[in-house]
Length: 320
Image (cartoon, one colour):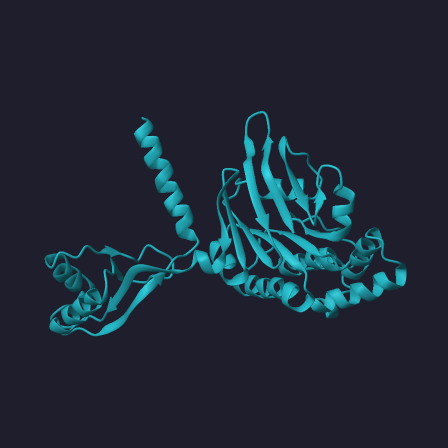
């Protein structure tokens, strides 16, 4: 679907993309990075709207440097920022975008009705867009990206400004774009948890450079880290601390996992084999505590950034 090779974009004072080489196949792919990581710059290059400084890129087998118009005919684009005309209805706007994509008038109206129904705006389709909520405006932008039945859509921060319920609904829509209609999706976000739940593949960029590109299941594979959560008791009002102290006395290093997403108030330690499980069970039983859970943790995408930041700081420290 998408391929880049040593793709760079440099401005006088900043490098937005730095020799980025990545392949994106069919399905739902997340492009994740902090604000300023180069995500929007990459999309503009892939649409043929901004030239790369060096390197090359293809979308649907077409060279972005010479076939930008052909690419935009086959690709849908949902921009990050609010760019909707306030005084027209959703129907008028999406029909207009469908006509600009080359659909004849009757087909444009039919496709608009179907698409607005799919994104949940059918009942509100004749209201002026200026009176819409943020969530409704995001759905209008999604509808115009889909109305011409593209092979691929680029969604730039589609959950921006949405509350948790609206965010979940938008993520559900994004997932169904592929499962129901077979349209591949490249979605950008700086919210890591969204991509874990929604995407088949994740591309992580930072400072315009590729940190990692792999399937979501590879990102979240099980680790050798054991997560332990225990109850408290009258004798041990802080059960976690009691378990930690005994394990340390037995030569087992632990650390607090509460700072990691989804970890809760748990102890984390490296499982060296079945003997580690036996030791933990024995310690918890000897202390008279209840074992709430003992399980292997899974990696989370957030840890890719954490590890990258630590490595960068370490490199700077050595360099100084």
